[in-house]
Image 1 (spheres, rainbow, N blue to C red):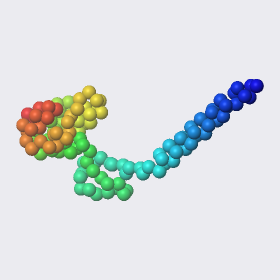
Image 2: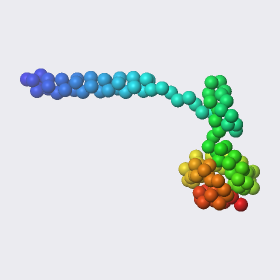
Image 3: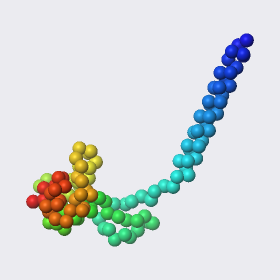
Image 4: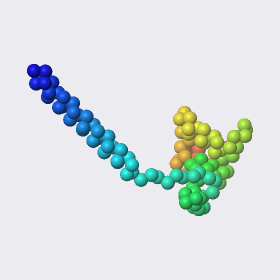
Amino acid sequence: MTDLLFGESKSAFRSARILAAGFILALMSTMMACPTRSPVVPVDASDGSSKDGVVVTQSMASRVCDHLRDLHCSAGYANDAGDSCEAVFDHAQSSGLFNMKGDCLLAAPSLEAARACGSVSCE
């Protein structure tokens, strides 16, 4: 009698376990089949060269700070405490408390446009 009552639930439980195992195997094979991205090594040179087969590009902070210096914006240089523009930019972005609006700053053709981004004062 017990087998009649619980036989169906054991079968359903067994089917659920098989289904879960199949799902996990499918997920693992999908993850293993996904190509890995090549790492980007941030450096201060944007010559497109490669280092150990990795394409070398500038970090967002380096590009923004270089552009601000090209515009002769004071925010592109070290602050009074001696922190570089790149260090300030990276700290602000990584803290999550302040968005430096790097894309806006990179697109700014003038000091006025950089100021309009709202993240630098550009004296």
